Amino acid sequence: MTVDEELFHLEESLRRLKIEFDIYFNGGSQRPPTDSRWRVENLIKKYADAPKLTYAQRFRYNGLAQRYSVFSDLWRKGLRDREEGPRQTGSSLRAEQKKHLACRVEWRDPASEPEKVDKLFEALVAAKRKCGENAANISPDDFRRFVQQKTAQLKRDFKCDQVQYVVEVEKGQVKLKAKGL
Image (cartoon, rainbow, N blue to C red; front, side, top):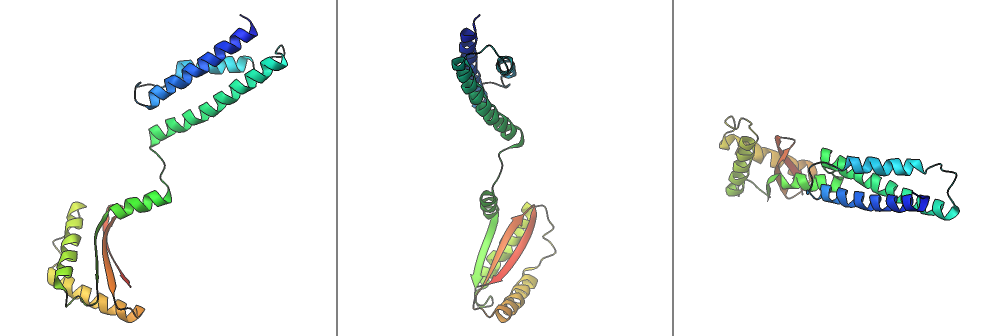
């Protein structure tokens, strides 16, 4: 086989390997095409330092080797994502945390809006039960007193008119957060 024929064979093998990886990543195959990849790598290594290549053949080989390198990097990242799961960015983590948002309530005076306090209490108890935490030790009256005291304290400390309470689930734990608005 001549060098030009082998370079043509390398090009065809690289094209087939790309198709096989596409099939694997789209779920059509259970195993990655490691045998085909091994054959392409051996052809690339064979001509890496071949002194008998003409300038045209060397140019063609370098293009094929570069294309394989780009594909190989993409396949490596795809395999890593498939094994470890896709990486999450900060914005996607914040969006996921907002999905776990159980309840958000704002008020000026909790005593004048008992239905909002009851809604917040029910959301807190439901979130605790969902996470497997003990919710029996919280009574509605104690919670109502706590919210009234905390609201008064936050309004005094932050010199604000409204207070916002949020029931969130973070890392499997229920958190009641309050902030002045």
